[in-house]
Image 1 (cartoon, chains in turn blue, orange):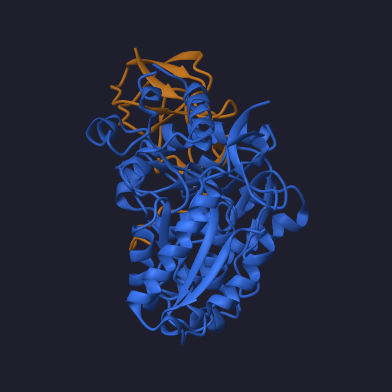
Image 2: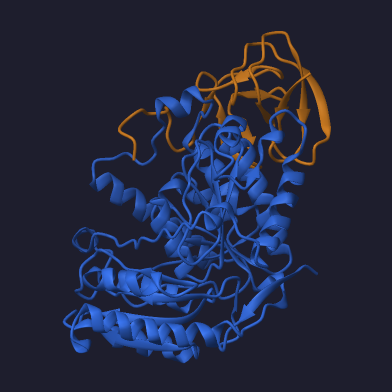
Length: 391
Length: 101
């Protein structure tokens, strides 16, 4: 049984990092939030840019990130007149038992007082949470988000299949894997439905991909699209293109579909592979999976993405030898030896799995070492969803 | 010797990991790294393109990633290049080029 060293939270979940989160529920309070975080070791500030009116998808993303076990404690800093209030979030975060405080800039009498108060709160909080020690836990506590961005012809041959092998290793030890980016599953509804654990899940997979194809058609975009570059690169059919993308999640049965509705953002309820209905926008997609509980992210890229995340380590994997040579500063794992037969898909997969365990136990990824704090919240166009009858 | 990768043990195609000339012999590598066969490629194969590992009849499934990526639209001989001229999607009859999503 594989173990990793993580931080146990009061609710029994296990984090791989021990961040303090300064959460600005609305961008009006982000600048002071950023200043507070910059003055306290281990603190990170995040916000969203969809306005302060209540939007379930946005709310669920912020709530999910605060509840993520990588977060040790939370300070919510509001402006004071927003509809998405710190209190709305706080009452849903409180049951986790994590240290939690709320503050309003208007209530504190402006930026200087709010920042001073916030820094004092966080200084005390970090002193408390810094006492939490890493302890060994079975790898089954791990939820891995598999993402891809800046793909090229090597992604489907080297990086995604080897990450898929690592994902299978994790699932076989009781762990959980999430893949998202619904538009990249287009055309595979029947293939993925056959991998579902039950008929209800099979139906939900078909519905999820079908809805995304209709959304895109409404925008005048054919989702079952093969670009000139795809075809010149050797991809023949849409099934082949999409299967290359979903391979990063491995080959195990699909346990369920995770939706983010006005009511809730669904989270995996047991180990295994899960599909999330989400965006292809990389940073927001990672945040969306982190909000569903992923503590760690494995990200395959062909051309060389540099994305990291505010509260989760992001492991970069490329199958393109030139990209690795040029962008070593950003890429953690070189999967390109698969191409010349020096290493097999499975052995690179084992290498990725071991690195995931190491990173889960505290080793920084290249994005973390460079101080990456990427964060974006995904929300669907509510008007379009209503017109389509989806909400 | 040049290589082509079989991504799943169930596949009846392999993907070229470098440019391969007509008549060249290639090693077909399994996911575990074993050389499962040596095959003479009958047509030039650009990087990332597929070669048939066995004869495939019209209407028969072409398998990559252990799944059906389409069906053969013409007889395909082992060693032949597989692309839009002899493989068709079952859900999108001809590859279409449009605005990227």
